[in-house]
Image (cartoon, rainbow over all chains, first blue to last red; front, side, top):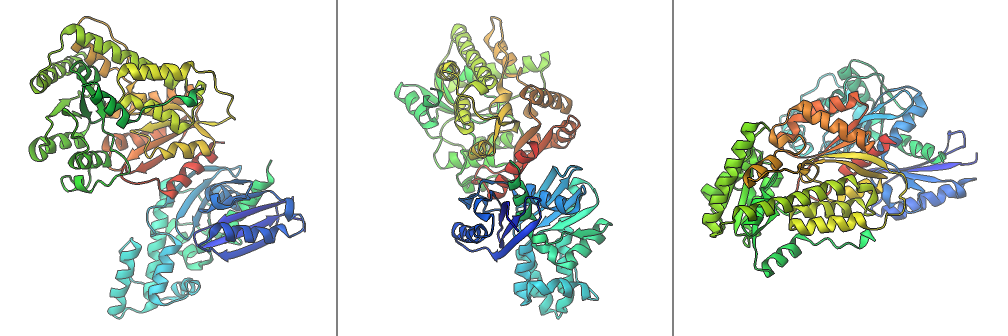
Amino acid sequence: MTLAALGIDVGSTATKLVGVTAAGDIAWRRLAPTAPRIEAQAEALLAEARAQPGGERAPTVATGYGRKLVASATRALTEITCHARGVYRRTGRAGTLVDIGGQDSKVILIGAQGQVLHFVMNDKCAAGTGRFLEVTAGRLQLPVAEMGDMARAATAEVPISSTCTVFAESEIVSLLARGTPVEHVVRGLHRALVHRVTSLVRSLGPRPPYFLSGGVAHNAAVAAFLGEALGAPVERAEEPQLMGAYGAALSALEP
Amino acid sequence: MPNEIHVPSRREAIRAQVQSGGGLAAVFPYHPPRALLRAHGLLPVEVWGPPGRSSSRGDAHLQPYTCSLVRAGLSFLLEGGLDQARVVLVPHGCDSLQGLGSVLLDFVKPAPPVLTCYLPRGDRALDRAFLADELRELDARLAAALGTRPDEAALLAAVEREERADQALGELLEGRARVGLGEEAFYRLVRSREYLPAEDFAALAGRALAAPAASARPARTPLVVSGLVPEPMALLSVLEAAGATVTGDDLACSGRRRYRPTQGPEPFARMSEGMLSGPPDSTRGASVEARLQHLRQLARAAGARGVVFLTLKFCEPELYYLPQLREGLAQDGVRALSLEVDLAEALPAPLVTRLEAFVETLR
């Protein structure tokens, strides 16, 4: 398929690139851990995309925290606008989007036409972000990808009272030293993360339906616990980690 | 061309004043009696931080819930930053500033005399009379500290110079679209009112407004900016890069100082009337309704669909109003973004994202 536009989302953890057709369907995708040399990595990924049919002349929108480092992008947009656009295109519905990324989390109110009505960000500490799970997974010597299943399967949980990621890590050490089963700790950690995100959602007022995007959306326990906390199901966007890049590519289609 | 206008820095203004044999008054926000200080031969130089410096020395003397404006100001004083001043004036703009006044008078006791001044929380005849008496008292304390005794004619001349500068500030803010400066450069010009002699500021503003009209800039998203002070100033460049422009100003350091001209033979009554005549202000105890009405008018006149509130952490006077202001503005379809900054810190990247995202929602 011929690529009509490209979107690149340079996140703190992963860099995502999406190519769309003129109809706005995803036709090409790449995902790689974000490298320290962002400019070089972004251009290398874009070179690969531009080698695809139509890619050479495809306009490009960059998003994510490294958006301004993508020298060859036509323009840059924030991940708030791009995630909302991507998710709205997939769901076609207004609602509340929770985007939990590697270093921050955002709650975005999407209007009936897909526009961003309001947003809040948790950007002052790592609690309520993917980093919270990464750090604690490191302490527990668990692969991050397995934590969600472990949390769901656990039959009990211990409360993690520290909202600060660093203190939570210390709390884990204390719990493990007391012989608390690892899976109970993991379930408690997920509950703590969701508690933080839920307070962000409530600050905008409850406006279902709820959607979840960003890398943490791959974690089924987060979606399930968030749904319990909000009293309504939380839909995980298809290819949740790509929604920012997808929204950027859709924006690049616009004149 | 307007972008060739040189706006003297605080340092340059201070040097010029000292070289001319004049004295300096270090003045803390928000509504300093500039005319009175000038009449005593002092150039009032306002202390808004300064930003981007460690406030650790001040922290040792203050409660942890004190705002960064006071912490940074006290640190600067302790580091010798205000040593050139003949007097330090701390108007009672809020509890934190009043606390600073007490700390300076009772504990720190810097070399320059520390003077305080109470600002009434209203604009009734009683409030104006009270402030006029406060200013007379301040005049006496300045005379005692400096040995200067300006007569009534000198006081009135100072009042009129400041009123011309206030008028110039208003014209500058109104004429924003005609001044071909970028957002940050424009606010460097506006904020030179904080330290330039009134007549120099009025002349500078006049030159900026009289310069050939700037070539048409691409259509920008108009915004109202509210809060205390546009720090870090780089915020304004972020706004500009995002395609926005500040067309309405409700900042304590600029827009809320659009005092009305006064008339009459008695200088202290005129100073008092002028200082209390500014737009509704949190530090002067304006009602929420009055603040909301003012912001609504500013947004309408500016054609703005968004208001950015720049708040300092722990700034109670400003934060008190925010929930109701946001709600009221939303009823008019005007969106609000609240950004909390710390004067000691550089511009954080997440704050840039929030600002840019906000502008994107207004397009």
